[in-house]
Length: 523
Image 1 (cartoon, one colour):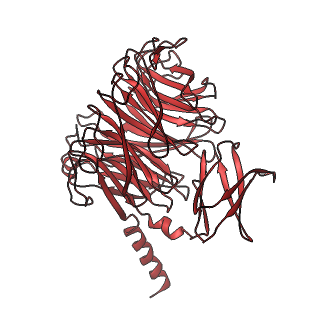
Image 2 (cartoon, helix red, strand yellow; image 1 turned 30 degrees about the vertical axis):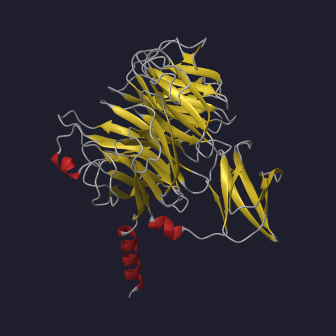
Image 3 (cartoon, helix red, strand yellow; image 1 turned 30 degrees about the horizontal axis):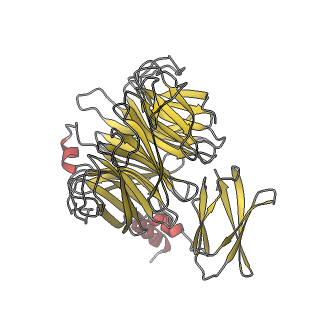
């Protein structure tokens, strides 16, 4: 075969089979489960987080406490369940977010209207309160915290800060009468409008250190928060307020993206509104290597009876100025849920096509499916993939895996058909799909030692593929100084790097008389 023809055929083969399903798992009980989040674990497995109405049934080995409960499943790298746990009161408890902590445990964050009953140890103060549960690496509770006012406090995000504390972030319409674990708090800011961004900084053990209410005179809805390299925060969400309160930028349309940069103490450094003439809904923001951000959400494109909603992606620099933008049209109502940076420096966009409310007959016939689209650093589309059954499959979270593939996790009520081979246990279940990316697989070179994630914030995992009894680790800064030393005795070892300053480090790993070096970026 001619060499050029061979390369064309090889390229066609790789594009055709570039995104194969490696495995898929359905997890749930006899009623309804709703997945909200998923994170990777140090042993290459995953922790699924969401809420459950089911009792002991299906893959649920634990019954619930009340109406809706927090529920977590630990699965291994192949999707097999290893352990599970549930937390809840006698009311409704909705788990929204899970994150890993520096010592190997996890922090759960959601909202609750349960009182002091079941697993919940404090009263309910309003419609919904923030409810935080800290667990150890095996899913057992260590402490919990409830914070709320007399209105509706909606949890959105939680992240671990550089001092090992946490930043809690959500949306609130409560007034200044706020309680924490049944204690009335002092010096709480008044609401600026109908609802505002609300961020609370707590210590490693859950003590409140400071809080901020941020908004204009109407409605602000927080969608996410990110740590920045200067130990500050980026808050991102939506606003329909004019210039008022904390909002300096003027509203552009019916509803706009609203982004704020806070310093370490929670003080505003800058804020910016972005939008068109109609409603724009921001859903994601992630940092880039140049200290900028990739921002994603949805935008309305017309005012017809059946409104067309597209994905809207933009690149922003460190000062908040837009460098490039693009829209992506999939169906009539497209929902963006995630942006992930791939190992090669590209970006995976993920979401689903919403059917409820549309009059588009093709969208109704196709149903709701998981959608993944890969773009490069300039926004150019590389490939797209739809995955689903014949009913409703709503993607909630996507992860990049160690082998360069992807985990797509969400909620499904599809039966066993099309891409879905596993049967549902109830009405809606967690549905987790492992997707291969042959482009990443072809680029992957098997190494004796792997270090991941990289860049990293809290810890790095060191995976040694060769037989050994003991290895010595030195972490060296760019000036050549040894800043940390460890002994490695297991094939997979998590190394805590939270105490290191932001920057580039060299990991020197000595096995007998062989020295290996790896570069790692500390965020």
